[in-house]
Length: 79
Image 1 (cartoon, rainbow, N blue to C red):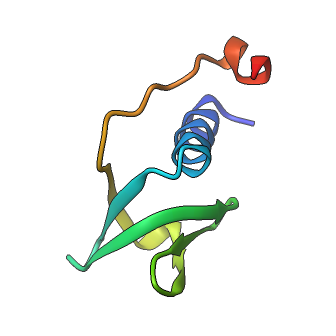
Image 2 (image 1 turned 180 degrees about the horizontal axis):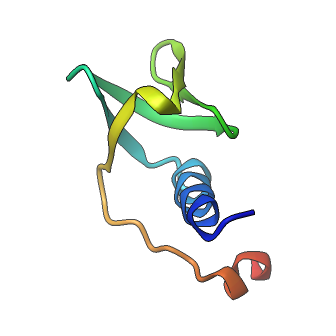
């Protein structure tokens, strides 16, 4: 797995585990809000009052509502 994918997975997994509210901006300018419920290589499941499947290729930016403490690769398994 590439280093870039690890960074993305670590970021999304931290948002999911901490139930951090996020704003997701799509490439067409639409703003979605909710919490990351789950994700895989191609999609993010975003949960608010409803669940939405958002394709990663349609995402421009993910903005957490609070600061996110990222774990280094050697700390990920230490929880």
